[in-house]
Length: 333
Image (cartoon, rainbow, N blue to C red; front, side):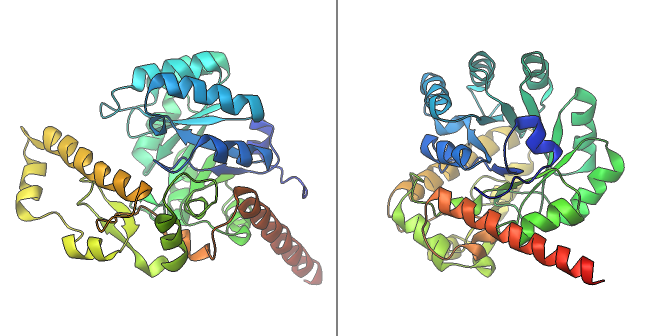
């Protein structure tokens, strides 16, 4: 193993490298988490990737038998009908950290803190970040414009700077990172405590998705990533497949009108999300002409389908090489 990269994040979680393998809906599985932990980074899996809470409990236990760390991503709004049970299981099984998304982290913080479970909150702006800080979050995950899946409206560096100037919490950067140089720049230049990396792990041997999805992440590039509101009603970054081109990326006039209706928007959003996620799920696991493959622009860094361990080893080697290069330049100056 290469040298440890020490930051407050590695000290908090007692791991070697300040990297979260980002929780990816449908993609992240138990084997990926075990391999990530073995390589010294912090794996996180969406609670919804297990079909039932009972399978989630058993899955966490399976991971903990072979890994020294595990995090769970909780959707904390009403779209997650299992939210209360998911939180209960996280507390009872003693996961190491929870990442909250798409809702208030209040209850998660209240129940996790007494158990020494760290809570990191996805944020896309200053207003929500301040609320998370007031509630007692341990760190903020700056979900930037470059992130895959559902993303924020602000570029990474701008968002990090805003959060640093308006809050006192440590920052974790999410979005657009797929190389060791990217990790180095975020930690040393932007002064974050860790990075969250997702898209480059889609094309891993251990991922449970179809070979077509993985190969698409190899074949397509950053310029092929587009934003669509057709799938969930909210901006979602996907690969611009022939099917995505065919259906377009903008809601039509009727869909937009329904989405803004005070009486109907809640139900329209739920229906749109349900139907869209069914398409995403079908495309993830089988070959279909309706290919809706979620990914971020960091697929630019994917050149082949590899093991999780090989992906992480390359990231750390690149980081080390870039760090040495910069140290040498400093000495020359």
